[in-house]
Image (cartoon, rainbow, N blue to C red; front, side, top):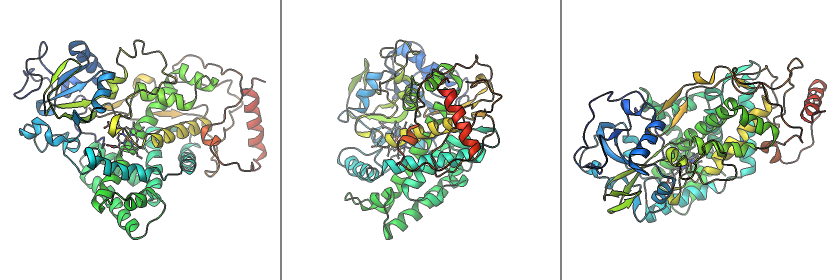
Length: 502
Ligand code: HEM
């Protein structure tokens, strides 16, 4: 999926127009009391809130309006979302059968057109064609050596942290979360030399639909075209070469389109996941205390974040291949449905108490399901696990620099991004990026870790326990420990003693 951001941002759009009745051809015509709700404009200032109102009014599947009042269903129930993605005989991702599109209701300049327009990629294909394209993508990804990928992630994390650790403050969205996935994905695709600020900027721009989106998109596509040509002529051991060499026989256009799909899906979703998980660690003291105390591991924290804030709130779209029924609603052939992990993950039928942790339960909808289930989920999880772990190892005293209420978000139908995550910490020395992260000394004047935002309660004291090895470290091949400079070694000892409660 492309995850393209659009002008569906909350607070923009049609404003407070008088409420319309269901437009002609609307699948929900005659359904429910009152007017239909819009997933844009004034109705959608808080999409989370809107989904809950829709759940109350309509149950597990609700009729809504997209921009230009194009009708759509949004699937709010957990079971109904799963049924949608797991029933390829009833629903397809091929938008060409969508009635409003066929009837000319969706104009070429519709803000969701980047999601709507059919493209020759596995996300939009079905049946044999989907299998052919998807086999090439998953086949190429299966050649990734996960051990060395985790090392790349660790190294890039080290480099990113080195860039700001001496300053004592950073924005973890623009200086960390948006960079790490791009660095890793460029490496995996075989274009590490293309990873730089310009590439991150271009991808961000292309996805956010800013004025320069078209040039930015062209910049990324140009890099992917050059890569395709290079690897077609001279294959190497990377995802691009394996995609080209796969027996599915992808054309250069298909290769480029799938590289684009992978690059944007991986970049946007993983950047969101990293930012969301770090926000949770920084703002929820109980969360950080459980991590420090060993009652929760970083991968478990990432999984909790996938439940509470799935990186894609909804995915456009699925289309009914026949008349059917879902969640008590009558769905007509050609109707469009939004797969919606955000409301689906908090369906009260599976989560009556949202404050209860979901440890050990991975049945959230963040990665979709069925034939289109995200094939990159292990990569996304690895980037988040290793990245968060290494960052917290390097900056154990990191804390939010503003009050939690001051954090701002940019929301669209597709996702909800943190705009920035300003943090501060005691300045730390740089570390060798080729080595696993090690904890930097806690300055002697500090009596304990400051956890959470500046205005939170006193820092919880971690329980005495063994020092946990960060996963990034655990997966490193064994290597002889290089002698540490004397000052750092003694700081490490002090930290160890403190950790062990000695
Ligand atoms: C935390 C990170 C990620 C999340 C939350 C995520 C989520 C998703 C979701 C919800 C879908 C659509 C599923 C559906 O249509 O039912 C999807 C599809 C896809 N994702 Fe991811 N993704 C992530 C990371 C990645 C990464 C790292 C890659 C590649 C390296 C990737 C590649 C893809 C591809 C190729 C598809 C299309 C699959 C198909 O249609 O058959 N994703 N992802």
